Image (cartoon, rainbow over all chains, first blue to last red; front, side):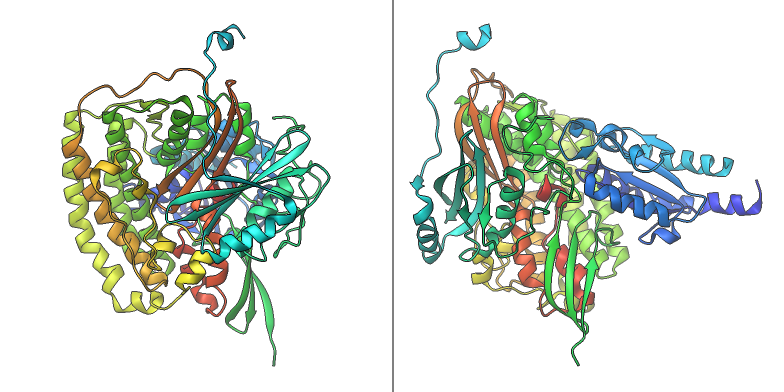
Amino acid sequence: MNILQKSRAKSPWILHYDAGACNGCDIEILACLTPVYDIERFGMVNVGNPKHADVLLVTGTCNKRSARVLKNLYDQMPDPKVVVAVGACALSGGIFHECYNVLQGVDGTVPVDVYVPGCAARPEAIMEGVMMALEKMNQR
Amino acid sequence: MMETMEIKPQEIIDIPNIRDVDVSELLDRVKKAADEKRRFVTMTALDRGDHFEVLYHFDRDLHLEHLRVRVPKGQTLPSISSVYLAAFLVENEIKELFGLEITDIAIDYQNHLYLIEGVEPAPMAKDKPLE
Amino acid sequence: MSNRTVIPFGPQHPVLPEPIQLKLELQDETVVSAIPHIGYVHRGIEKAAERMEYTQNVFLVERVCGICSFIHALCYCQAIEQLQNIEASPRAKYLRVIWSELHRLHSHHLWLGLFADAFGYESLFMQFWRNREMLMDIFDKTAGSRVIISTCAIGGTRRDISDVHLQEILDTLDEVEKQLDKTLPVILNDYTVKKRTVGIGKITREQALELGAAGPVLRANGVAQDMRQLGYAAYGELGFEPVTENDGDCYARAKVRARECYQSVELVRKAIRQLPDGEILTKPKGRPKGQVISRVEQPRGELLYFLSADGTNRLDRLRIRTPTFANVPPLVAMLPGCELADVPVIVLSIDPCISCTER
């Protein structure tokens, strides 16, 4: 592992986009940032700008309108980048998979590296998912 | 099917305080509700096959009152957003999801409140598949 | 010189956990008009509710909103109970109040944190969210899940709360109240916070009523309307008075929610003290037939469910009107005249829940 990879793995910046979730997973991602789970001890920071981000956390079933926004955000992120899909909806559409405005899962829109299951995904699972994504990023 | 037959017919429950009105007198009725300081709660549309049933829900001091209009398919319904501006969102929703043409909405999203171009219009109508 | 610019606010914005877009028309730094553009979270739950069986819909409506999932399920179950002409047992009614109020408490903590973050008070955001974790632990212990607890069922509740857990809830609430005493004065008395909230995003009482505002937005204008006054579940026996403020600005809305936190703590304590023994689930009989409207108070305001059932095991129509849907027109009225930098604070002051709004 060279110094660039090592430092990247120690300070991944996270971009979160809600592509159509019920909020359950979103508030769990926010809970990761706050004192009890404190994701910042791994050097992770939640940023609002896609050009600053290394990891894209996507929650929710993608719908036809948010798919375009999601694609835009993904395209703006610099390489290397990884995508973590959080929650049952982001994986397959979950309980909404047969709704008329729902695309089943976000992997039809952006390539997903790590799938975090759960409805809603627990903060521990989300953190584990991000750590796995970082390993994958360093193998590239 | 057998299970349905065993069950005793129940009394059909309907919502209280409901008043049927004609499309032509709707705006006058709504204006009256506005004059009496009723709070507009929402509208509900139901697809009844050959016509749409639209309910207007108003609240005064925690009591709900409702107006019901029946609009045959293919006919239009006037918007009440000139009286209650708050109705513009729900009117756009009904127009888009049911395909009921509502005229003169204060802010008209031209059928793109929820759905983007190129998708099947009026997905909530009964003749559209459930999935 | 006229310098009108249109700025899109959202759909992806650092202060918004959820996507909504506001097209802001600006004259220099001042907002002239705002038009909301939604549809980024629209799934089509109302249609899905016609496809699923009415008993399965409980799980569907819980996922309309992950923040107040229990209250959605409660509203739906109460509607079905009315149609089937059954009543939840007294114990179930009290358990429903306990879980509802804990949800309100966690939602208000969540909001107070996000609101603090919106005017740049990050440490306060962390404080509120740390306190909120105590409440999440209660959900974890009593229901086995942190967010979507799935304890409400048609005819009562699916789980009981044991005496050990009831005592734990009481102990946690003491701690929560102690922490609120420390953190809330910052929101309510701090000079810089007041500078950002007092007089910002003001609407009048008449506007609030005309535009159909709901919940804390309405009560911040002095209108004492809270669906808990209807006395559903056990609220009728607990004695309930809505919290109101008169100024109709962001500060008044924050104050309403801050005072409601204490009120929720008291309601849970009272419900635990008066909790009767007995069964928790009444067996439903027959199939729902007819039309019914059910209203409950969500953390964000009045939630209305309209159900139309024709006696089969599927519903004919399920209509969900959520409080944020009602609060979007007042938001559009709050924004003109404010400065661009105040837009995030004003948007958050209605406590937007977009996934509720679009379903």
